[in-house]
Image 1 (tube, helix red, strand yellow):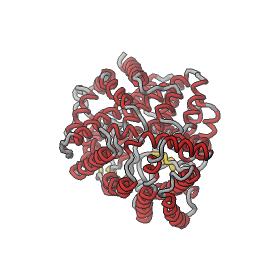
Image 2: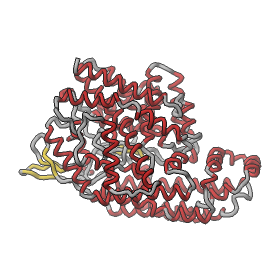
Image 3: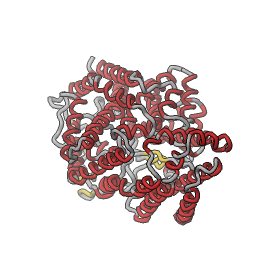
Amino acid sequence: MSVLLTDHQLMHYRRSGALLAATVGGKTKKVKQRSEIEDKHKWRLTDIYRSDKAWQDDFARLKEMIGRIGNWSGKLADSGDSLFSCLDQRDQTAILFSKLQTYAYLKLDEDNRESRYQAMVDEISALGTILAEAGSFIAPEIMAISAEQLEEMKAATERLKLYDHHLDNLRRLRAHILSPAEEKIIALSGNVSRSASQIFRMIDDADLQFGTVTDEEGLEIALTKQRYYDLLEAKDRNVRKEAMRVFNRGYLTYRNTLGATLAASVYNDFFHTQVRKYDSCLQASLDTDNIPEKTYQNLIETVADNLAALHRYTSLRKRVLGYDELYPYDMYVPLVPEAKLKIAYDEAVSHLLEGLAPLGREYIDNLKMAIESGWIDVFETECKGSGAYSWSTYATHSFVLMNYNDTLDNMFTLAHELGHALHSYYSKQHQPYIYSGHAIFTAEVASTTNEAILMHYMLQRTSDKEQKAYLLNYNIQQIVGTFFTQTMYSQFEDQVHADVEAGRPLTADSFRQAFRRKYQKFWGPELTLLEESDSGCLRIPHFYRSFYVYQYATSYAAATLISQRILAGDKEMQDKYLNFLKAGESKYPIDILKDAGVDLTKPDPIKTTIELFGRLVKQLEQLLMP
């Protein structure tokens, strides 16, 4: 990860790693075992399957269901009933697949050393490729049905109208759907296409060990990802410097391998771009959700033209800290360390239930239900997946992984992930399976709106100057991590995909050079980069999902507009927002946001966020350097 991401922004990424214990001078500072955590603070995976045996039984049933999908091959144009039956069988199979996949991955993340769950993840992943192959004939056969015939089929079969939007979307992609035989080949390549990401995950989650560092108490501790981001807030500059050195050294040990896996992922993007007959990797990625390219360009160009406030913040940090040189390991230390908040989990829950009240009674009741009903795995344990995420399946409620350690950042991460969880809850309550998901383009709006409203609550409830400055700086860092950093990442992705499209080689060195240029441009001349600062490009999981991260920035912009209007007492916006949560994927993402009052085809939402950032920097400057 880039060192410019805050702890909380890293929690957007699904990250896990081996957590070790270190013994020094007879003292041991250990990560807890799972058995030491109270059940009320663990997620309840028995809500998915009562036992591994039940999982295995459904796994066998899924194989049979997948085998039945092919019964409709060559028959989709026969009648509306035939088409509906095939789509319904595909969806029921997908629901069961998702249930099985969720259980396997979440059980593995309870302890990444568990070989039986590693095997279950491998089994369900392999079956996912078989499922994709089994249904690979569906899209090409639908494409072969004329528009007139399809309308006749829908008129004759009322229940087929459920799939109106889905069918329209398929036909929109007609030019990029291949023959049934070609689609089958692409489906069979699924395991190969995923291999770069899987290799990265094994290095990042299972094999990578950082070694030890000395904390501010003089105790030598095993460095983990979670501890690393905590240590970057240490008052002792030498602790921060050592933590960053050891952390980066861990990744640089694998720099050539990580460079090769990232290159393989980009080559895979280019392969699918060419096969699907798109002009560029960007176009191929955006077309999946029908996102206009001008939405992406609005973000890139508007931010690139408005970096002055970000440079001003870098300069302010340098002046407040009183350093002649500002380094990346200085970007996290609180500017008002004595005001740093320690927030226990139960206190965080209370703040969420009170602070998010502007979203309405219904939302708060559902939030309380999620917190009290086994949705959340709260605390860090040995070899548990690190970071945080929300994982949803249509067959059950959502699940939230946390590694809560009593920080303000953790409280906002909890608000963020519960925003995802409730978004899924509302979508499943109001949409059939085919529309119950949500594109990342809209998903991050739900999580970030929670954060924005909670931040307003935290700022309003304090009159202490130092605490206000601490919260302002945290708010600034939220925007830095979610908005500016993700836009920088997007520019980097643009560059490396342009390189492969132009036939230029991709290596660890070329990645690092491109990343370094973007890094320095965004944070300006007041930040002095370390030699290893550009290694951040080699450890970002979402680079294995092409053109993914820009959506964090656009989502932040949308959430800024929505939250400002809700906090201003706009009841209509509150209603629109709940409808937005219920919409799922019943429309294209850009249109769902338009219904909520946000038009991301225009630069206005981007400018609103940049203007907010500028105001926050000025307020902080006035408090710290009057």
